[in-house]
Amino acid sequence: MNNIFRFLLLIGTISVAQAFSGFPKIAIRTLSTAIAASSDSMTDAAIQEVEAGDMIPSVVLQEGLPDFGGKNDIDISELIAGKKVVIFGVPGAFTPGCSKSHLPSFITAKDELKEKGVDMVICIATNDLFVMEAWGNTSGGAEAGIRFLSDGSGELTKALGLTMETPMMPRTKRFSLIAEDGVVTEYFSSAEEASNTWAPAVLAKL
Image (tube, rainbow, N blue to C red):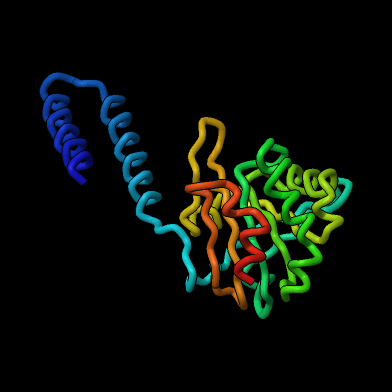
């Protein structure tokens, strides 16, 4: 808040100077942009990370169809209504940790998860729908019954308080959760160890 106040004070000073000396308007536009960016950053930081008891919000994700055959728009809250589901998020499709450890753990555990009453396993990332479809197809994840959904806009990731800013694009922090009828019952963070989000940790809580 203090930073924003300082920016506003500086803009006021520049505005007065401009009136008397023709100070370039571009400076004000640049500072306004900086304030907007700072405000957005503060808003993102204020979103609390998801926890048990939270509802999965109504956000439309995209599912790519095989052979680039188009897409399905899927409201995540409608998809999981009345079901026990596991949702896990990864920073990026085809990335080493996600492809070698996180995703394979759920492929291997598919039968155990089903025995524990899990109706559906969903993987999300901010990659586009075509990348997600290709990853699911080539990894064996789709064959194992995992749904690969693109959160391309990052809307769901942001709503869950799990946005990770990178130079390339906003990504999803590594996580897993269990939800029943849209309500989060268990949340698994990778803050301490990535393995805390893998299937064995999830199975231990089912």
